[in-house]
Length: 86
Image (cartoon, rainbow, N blue to C red):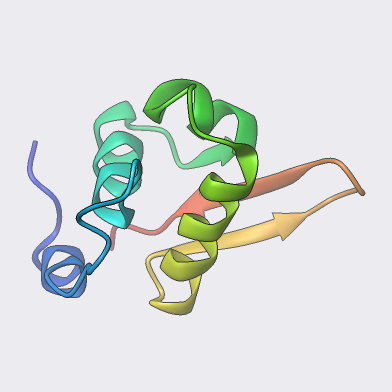
């Protein structure tokens, strides 16, 4: 299953190729899972359990700024991420 073309175009400019976790890796993992919502911990568990939650949050912030995901915070400890493939 390939990423939507607009998402692929956005990710072409992903400059984080030398990091443990890239924006593209996060999006591909979310897309392949076929789920619309994830917690930060669920993304971390699926993508790279060896990276910190801070790194996952940084990638998600980058993706949110690019309009690829949206975040919803429900309490001090729960943030849900909505993958927006369309």
